[in-house]
Image (cartoon, rainbow, N blue to C red; front, side, top):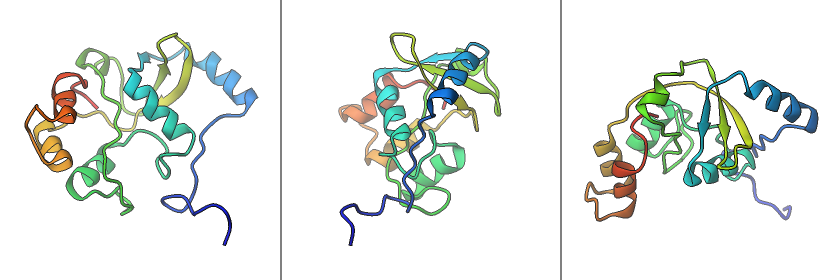
Length: 154
């Protein structure tokens, strides 16, 4: 047996670009709407990109989100207990479309990733709180965050 265990989902998903592709992506980024990541979103995208959230290859789309909320499983059946979503404002959601690209930037304005939008939806946050956190009580810090800080559109 090797020193490393098999990654969750069977394949490590490291999504970093090589140097040339990264330079091209930075140039392309100017052509797309920009979302400034929150600190929490930045942590999530870093974990997606470096493979720590394998088998995820991006933020959850609607089918994966529904599977996680309802059954703690991605659409392909792999166990995944927590929705990893990109929450945005209604205003920003109105500027993008499914299949389009979005530039994700950190607080300093550096390009972190280019995202292809798979789905845009307004989640049932009460259901998400109940199913994922077992509570709708805002005394629970994750429920408070979901209802008062997270954006209304995924």
